[in-house]
Image 1: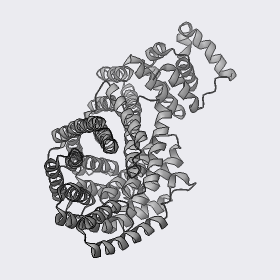
Image 2: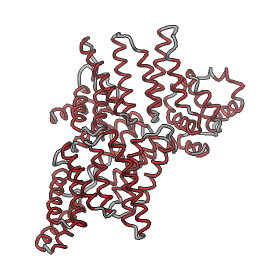
Image 3: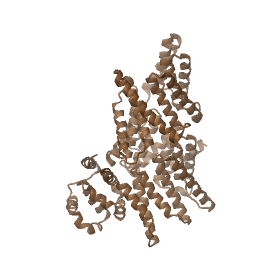
Image 4: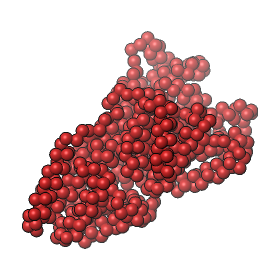
Length: 591
């Protein structure tokens, strides 16, 4: 993205270039080097506006040099009301090739090894580290954020009680960086460290609220697809959230993070009514306390979109992911990891939305944009890249199936195969064989091999996916039903194993109806498969009965009301008292 594009995008951040104040800033910016000493004495907000003027005039090298002065950057970080603008110009500086994030984080690390003259100097340096680490984290610079927090951790090596609390606080931030950066082995080591520190607080009878720490543990287990552990830690986080006397001192950020991350856990556990309340309340709280252009709101929107996708509210899910992408683009421009993730999320939601009509151009565009952004990163995010390639592979495969040109079809199928193999290999390297992510990749390959007329290979992939999912999730999980339905389709359309296909279709239907109800959209594919199966075999009585069931299903679908879309309503969140009462009720109903 060029400098002019960034400046054009910055217009949406309420920058008024024509005011008298900005004319004065422009005059100072022209002679910036002449006034360096005086400039450093300016109030923080005025200094920020002057730096933003430098950015708007394309003076990126000059601005980058100033921001590598930690004292100057510290003052800029104090202007929290203009954080979106800072993210915007900082991303432009990083894209300009200045290596600014790495340089600033490294300078902070180096200065952390100096001898501080007074305890106050040390405390100010630690405070700066928290500000820098949080800023980097919010922008997706996870390694740089972690470097700042690890430098703080090294400074808190003595065993005073207040330092023990700080070490736990810093370690929680470190594990958050590692989880978001897909470094799960390191996250597990940090989790072990945190548990050791928590044990020390118990031994010394020190009281600490562990809600945020426990929800990070839940997030770790969710990321590695251990849903039972994720659920257990989520409930423990709820218990900590409602403990007295800590309940009065818990920050709104902590409350929002516990709610939104728990909603993801409850969603994958198919506890949809509770997940619905949790993710909606997180969105409303974030909107009220941080505004609709904040990154905290983006986090909540994405979790809401995740929930909507699971409960078959596909159109509303697309709207949520589109809004998240729009906000990220407005804040960062087009070359940030959070923008890449938002593109990928939207691509998958669009793929699901357009699955029945075959119009995948928009989904493909977003998948390719996410991959392009990630491939431009200096530090490759291989697992995230694999996820984006998986989404693109699904889309490309569907486009290939609809292609009437054999050469184009083969080319697209081979591209999809290469993308799926890349994703599977990485999943095996990171998660191993016995993991839901790996099982999903096997299932995707099974569908692809069916499209490539490699039926025995397709069958093997589907059976492998089913075995893994059943061992981890049980025999009646949605993921199992999905793989069973795919295997039934293979038997029905290509391998002519009609008896086995019929049995699998009905098993898939039974699981889906119990989990999602009689109007679940995924049932259509199983019903249509059975219709075809009975037609081919001439089973007219079974076909008549099934067609009546299918007609009832279609009537249910046509009369079903869409879910309330919380993003479009002017609604207040629950009061804190009512929210915590709901959390307590959730704990009691799930233990």
